[in-house]
Image (tube, rainbow, N blue to C red; front, top):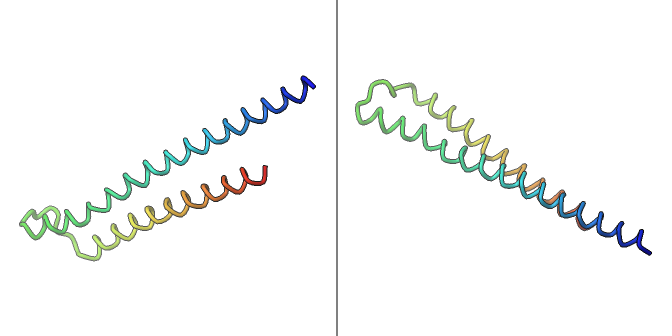
Amino acid sequence: MPDRSRRKKKQLSRRERAAAEHQRRQDGLKRARTIVGFSGVIPLIGSFACDAGLAITCVPFSWYMWMWAAIFGAFLGLTIRLIRERRRFEEQTRAG
């Protein structure tokens, strides 16, 4: 009987460790997504700065669109990864 209780304690601690690791990864992805999301404002600010007369920020409009598309793609990729990892973890906890 003592072996079973030890085994259960190990399984619980393994589950808790897995949950803590999952939460750490989720927090890191959320932090990265927030930073990428805020950086999406940079092309907008550059465009407004050019309109205001700051000559160094005057680049072709297509460059701003490329920057915004790259930033939006990174944001979308991080969001999808966040959702997929959460679903995968939920399936693993239900199965095991």
